[in-house]
Length: 286
Image 1: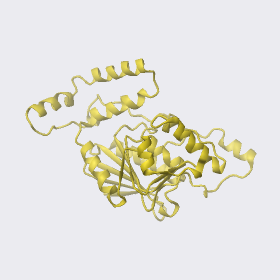
Image 2 (image 1 turned 135 degrees about the vertical axis):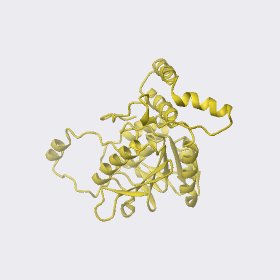
Image 3 (image 1 turned 180 degrees about the horizontal axis):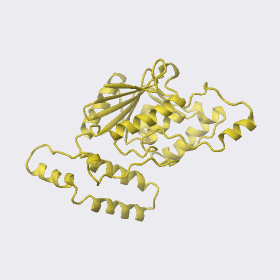
Image 4 (image 1 turned 90 degrees about the vertical axis):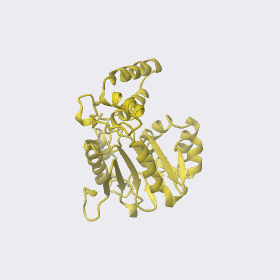
């Protein structure tokens, strides 16, 4: 089943569901899937919808056409008067358009199928698994168009060497990183032929979907939230998460199914009071 969110003529965002896997496809191929207001709003709706669907255990994000995401759409209407621009942007909240920004902890696999630039790097930062096609490239062009490069690099610095992040920011469009280099630096975890990207993302998603959805979401949440803490506090909160899971149906079912050599029957996280709070965190960014 495929949904078309925020459609006006051709839809800028497609959401499909197949088994336990949901897929979000950025669908502005003529603009290399550059982000505009319609896409921001559609993405927020998509994350809420897939998070609320008990059948969906893992979510794939990819792009239509030759590009994954060219960043924010610089052709969108802009304010040219500096004073008016300052006034209008003084209290603009941070857009929430990725899973982590929306407080969604269902596992996310991002499949980068082409250029991934500037704001598009948010998806790389906020995904649990990132794979890319051989022809994918990564670049941060903020400084080339007079924009501050801060949010995406801060997140990338948690995944890869700081010097490599600073180099991307400083060199701008002159530093177009290949998929092979991104893999070497730890920005992504796998490179596959372009014509195999979709199938490989689906294969990984099917493996992820085999795990207990409650256990996996709680595990991912503990890890992501630890990034904002010191090591001692992070370990203490992690241990509390382990203890809080004792007695959960999946905590009993997993070992039992293993002993009986059968597939486990996991419970729906939304059907138990023990599921973690997944409310959006306004303005939060890892």
